[in-house]
Image 1 (cartoon, rainbow, N blue to C red):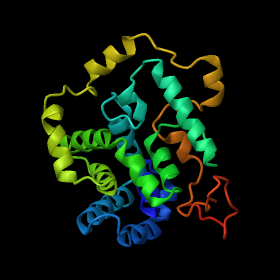
Image 2 (spheres, one colour):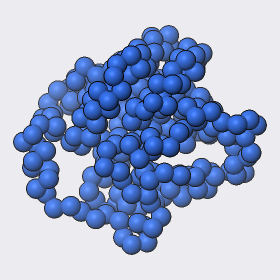
Image 3 (tube, rainbow, N blue to C red):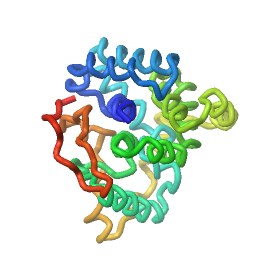
Length: 251
């Protein structure tokens, strides 16, 4: 499902490769029939916002939005397990799921990083991809509502994902807006100071650390250093990667 790859790129750390591939991404969004015209328009607006503004300013905004506090973390298990040791096992299980499908992580990023998870789902059959999104629909709705609360155009990505998962975005967000309205923002200087004072928890044992990539300092930055093709290689039904029919493009 190509639109999942597009949303993966939009949610990742902004790069020159993304800006250079603007036309291709614009065409992919416009032709996506998995989402409504309203959702397509919102994604195109986000793409324009990223590409029409200074890239360094966009990168700074991205890091401030997703890298401060935990409420907008792009790590799925941050919201599910927090600092529990269950988080380590969950990441190992997810990594094993990728490996079984023939999906190799060639960058230093945790397997539950949402753009990476979307890239993986984009290689699966449509039904499996929709089910994978449905499994985390509540988290997608929370992130969408929190981003809307901050008037961020990035909320469009999560509304589109909810629609692909089979949920009506308006209804899904209505269910969590009261919860979000009552939350105390965790990206203030006071909240960040308190977070830094907490003792770091190592939720991976030695064996798990060998299997899971490490988290970069800025969200998505390590992954962004490697060009990510919009057209990923085809996958055989036995889970092994097939040779690409043509040379992949760098966006």
